[in-house]
Length: 327
Ligand code: AMP
Ligand code: TRP
Image (cartoon, rainbow, N blue to C red):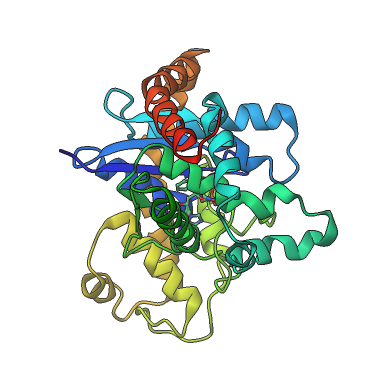
């Protein structure tokens, strides 16, 4: 039997090459080997303020980009989290089995809440419980995510083990699947910060729907350092990041990439990298335009996706409620 893979993506901001290299590309590649379920996590999105019309259109945009990137709706399920009410319900149940101490250790909450202080929502604090519910409902074996989500998957493992030890075997214990390359694409403007959808700066991220000229301009402006040699050197984060992106898009080995740039400088690397990214995104962008031409097509794929997996989620939820003694 194929192992089951579950992952989620937030329908907020613009999907960028960090999402693509760190997540979406691995999802596409895994479709033949695994049974894949991908969830557009709109309930996670509302842990911070969202404008309703923007949220609605972003959900379709993200779905369209997933299909355009090569997710095949005939074999892989893509659905919207809020279409299956078991997610919110199981999150509540898990809340009652997660000690505050575990949640207080979540570094992503600390980072995200820093800016909002007392205005931060309870939902943002509780975000990892909802993520645990997402994963556990489908008895996922593997959870492909970027490095930043490792701690949340660990919490999912901890809560499922805790529940199982109290009530007996109920949940399957999932494992994180962190890609070796592209696990952490950094911002072009500041290579010490992770490339992020919430960063407003126009030179920060390359978005999947950026035009070739915008991509070229962003790459050429990317922050580097005053050295010359083009090589994978972690102590030079700017150049290391650009080479990592090059590696992610070309699939070439590091020695081969370095040998291409012997005797060349940063400008040569940037020029070549820009073309590599433009060419890498071009097929995706044209498929996206095709998919969105027919109104309602993406919605129909999302509805079918939810219909396919809802029974699985409902069965898990029913089992959990029964174990606890509810109802
Ligand atoms: P998010 O943008 O937080 O919704 O993340 C969606 C997926 O992309 C998750 O699996 C993240 O771990 C991954 N991801 C987000 N930003 C990056 C990045 N800069 N580098 C690599 N992976 C990322
Ligand atoms: N928290 C993840 C992120 O921001 C998205 C997510 C929600 C997710 N539920 C999930 C990822 C379940 C994997 C599995 O990237």
